[in-house]
Length: 343
Image 1 (cartoon, rainbow, N blue to C red):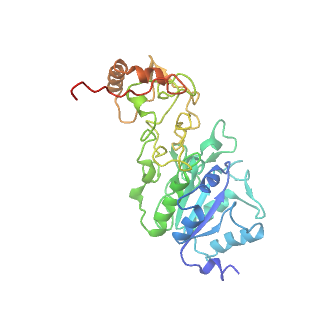
Image 2: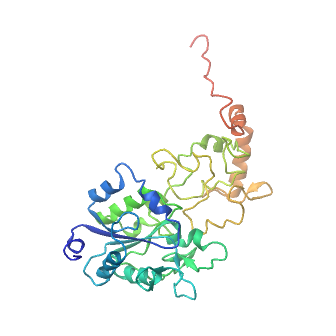
Image 3: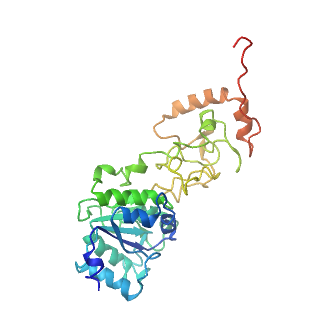
């Protein structure tokens, strides 16, 4: 049955597995739009071999697909792995056994990655360990090729997929649906190379941007007109812990569900595409400071420049922005410049 259907399909074969996580990246994937997920995959010639939320096969049928891949009966072009890999206890991986197989997910992912054309870590958990690796990390969770900032993970620093790439880390918590589909389409077209990855092996299609780009609060940022409490309109960098000027992602130019982002919803950016984001060393919604100056400064900006520019900006802050920044709605609207008598 396998050979007559999945095994002989033309196109680009995709397998999706989940382990130590919440499933949020799959839920996010289902929100792909323009076109929707199924139309996107079909249009790109991507065959979904199996996905835990979308596939009818279960139990022994699903296990048979995995066995057929390892036996070479089905070509595996892309292995998408969501959630951290749990190595414990004692490197056995037995904290997550794949039901009905008697083997740990750790073993399965290592074997499948060895025959995959490309291997993708979906979300910050699979990329670096993420939330699952936080705290005391009792499950010894890590990413496919990173344990937070340390290279290695469960596949090893030297790992390369069959087509010569390291793990592609589509990081985010959750990751944006179109970051996934865009990367898969590039891979299916053969238009993705190692040069398309940044230093953390994230696709540069979204990682070459900052969350700060397109932020609707940028006018407040320019004048350092800052919010002091939740729900206020001002910039959230100075007091509310926002890391949008440092976070690599295009959340404010490639919106979520067509219209949203954390910042547009009133939440500070917590830099969820970066390794170790889950433990910043301070409350997410507070900005750590030294001598009144935020410790985490915007990317590429020397501290002295920031201090000088912030001082000038605050001195020049229009009254409109100063009042609106600490309000939950616009209290001073922009004024129309009055025309002169002879204009």
